[in-house]
Image 1 (tube, helix red, strand yellow):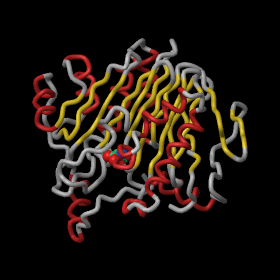
Image 2 (cartoon, rainbow, N blue to C red):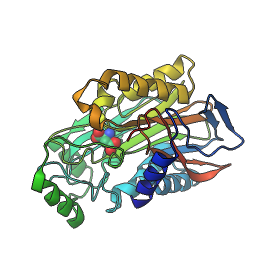
Image 3 (cartoon, protein in one colour):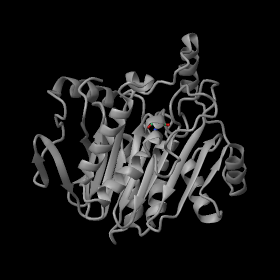
Length: 336
Ligand code: ASP
């Protein structure tokens, strides 16, 4: 967290104008009008949102090397931040809702367009693993709340308390003023979304989060919604989101990024266009003051990109040529 705060400060200092690019430039980066418009990676390629994506990518990469399926690699990979109490936006240790309950959302999707999802799930550390079981063992796509929990328990998942002492303390502090509005800003929207392009060229993805801190009890964000927090079409590409889930749902964000890639846009152009659409739809909206959204996307060829509304968004990329590393997203607005 502190690393990312440092980064955000540096990004704010380094940003010169709208669309200023912070990404390091290397041989396979094309620059056009100041933007990084395409980065190409060898297969397999793993991209995950935020700094915790590094550890997730590492685990997923090892799984792929061992011959695990992409879905197993995603479950193990994003399972690392899910289990890490220091990551306060995912799984165990996630910040609770306004009633002090940790409620989790997750989804997973494979190259056949099969998907599984859980929302408003409590007491299970690895919602992504439950989402995979929904995909594999039910005729449905999405299970929610108590039903999702019952299903998880029937599949052998252990029910446990996910509210750590530190997260409880933060919630108690918030209660002192208890602003009703769940706040999403450039520092606290840290869903992990992971996209995988495997060595055969097949796409898959997963997304897992504890959602917006201090949200209303029962609130579900974009992250478990196929088409909003995550979408892929194996003929085209894959996309995933982080940020204010309400804004991503209103615009069917990830599905739209994929549709734009289908029409021939690069991942960068597609992410940028949807972020701009979100901005245009929200510029007079009550959510605008704290609105932040970011997308990552990859196409079938291995071109990938990220783009966010405000500075501060970064993502972890792992491919055989460049190894596992962070990249800073380009963004639309300089103001945090
Ligand atoms: N998209 C998530 C949500 O709205 C927040 C995040 O990215 O952390 O629940």
